Length: 165
Image (cartoon, rainbow, N blue to C red; front, side, top):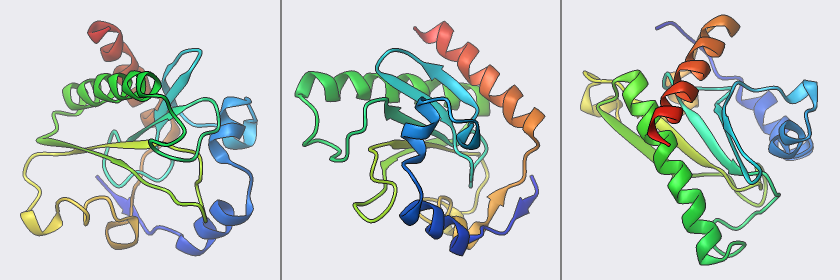
């Protein structure tokens, strides 16, 4: 799949000075549209706008929370982790991933809203290009997918989630 360079400077500008992109997405702001794969009253999962791997999906609580564990009760956290598992399993099945990486990234300086990255590593990626390298857009660039391809992928992941539920 073709890749395009990651525009780090504009990303940092948006992430540090712009509104919370997840809250804007949840609010339905058309400027912050993403391809949603799952949504319920408490959480949302959508394709990463800057995927380094095909199927790279974010899972988030709808309510703005910033601490990956500290802003949740144990029950809330475990509920979200159940969703992360379901998304991971759907992404794995749809993409044929050799491995699924799951990480909570972000910081108090940018992308404060808690979210988990579910990133599927395809088979055959050389070891030197796996793990952190595979998820580093500054090193590998961003997968170039059309809106139609993203919409189709989101629909297939969402359909697979329905089979897992």
